[in-house]
Length: 385
Image (cartoon, rainbow, N blue to C red):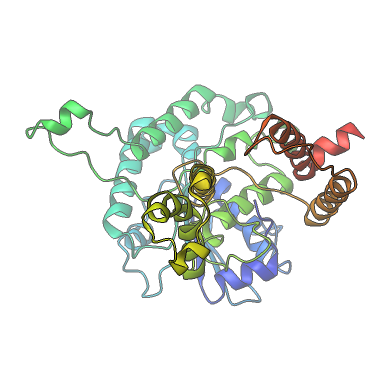
């Protein structure tokens, strides 16, 4: 992930608003995100202030951070906001978090059954109001508590099994099953409902560490800041310009290729087939023969072009899952130059031409591939040293 600072956040959220709705877990994340955007804003609940109230702060980049205390998601303000009619300028980020209060006060709230009905109502309202409700809507998973650190009063009503059931219910609601091939051919089977345009960052619970909490529910600043960074990567990576270094690749669409990229890719992929089909049919005195190699190189050129096209698709489209691409540009450049120098110093001329990509060439390229891999993997090099 890209590590956002106040400058990057200001570029992404300038003159916009970020809205949090929910309980104390959502409130803690609200303060953590606001503090990242502007270090002058409080990083936690101000001492002596009312915990069960709304908060509003404006950062130095004119970003309005708002928090609405609504652990049961049943206030009139929340209902109006989910209708999309609260303001003509929709929030850049809308974060909703609830769940533990339904367990903590099950007798008055109605418990799990009312929580499920509330979640269904909220998700339905979001589906109706999108895309005008907010640029990005996030529904926080129910936080898994550290049971042994909970107070006796909380431990009596908040159980990990119930939290797991609530998160499983959220996953099912947001990942509705699609129709099977047989159902697609059956005209009497109704189509599945459209997916709910809501993000569910389940990784938030994986990030929790019992050593970073004192009461089993609220975690320290490093955990909260890491969760806030995930929200920023989700919202801002696709909004900021994708320039070198490419360190904002997660949670974003790849930029469209330029006409020059398309032209180069087409020429590389089409050179071999054109050589194969066009060269034998050209007259011996045709000037085009100067630009086309001998037909014996058509298969190698086609193989090379196909490999380049496949590599482009694998790295620049959604056909394959994207991988983390973290590297040190200075170290990578140094090692590439170092290995290039080693190759130039040890270069030898072969006794005879053994053909395209012969065994000696492929064995040598295997070694260079290992060197390139080591150049890209700084932790691997450090462990070897």
